[in-house]
Image (cartoon, rainbow, N blue to C red):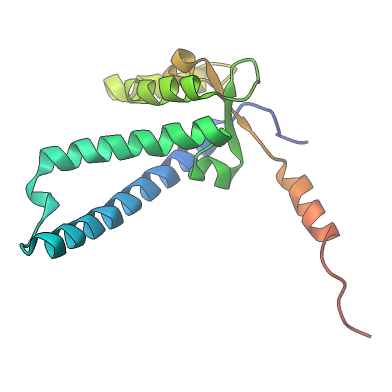
Length: 163
């Protein structure tokens, strides 16, 4: 049975989110190190961004917002979602647009409030929509059929050179 187009479950969504958090942290850390190096070289003084936690927190929030909103608006998925075969659509199944991606991303922190109760909705609702999905009028669905992709890959394998 193909899962393509079916609402994504809590385990797959959590795994995709964990991948995205890892990528956000990794790229933010690398970017911070590059920024410290460049600023230190240009100014001639040793610069450490860890000495400015407020600036670092704002920069991380802006980076996380951009990481989620931009790819959702362009392709309907983040890196973690793409890796696990998930896509965010409008609730009616149409492709997600920029405004919907921004609204969903801005509402995401609300799902964490009160011990993450916004995410419990994924377990309780038939359409598996969390609070931020309800606010953004979005749904997360499986976007590819793993079995069909595997069969397609096998069909395209080059012939072996054996006699």
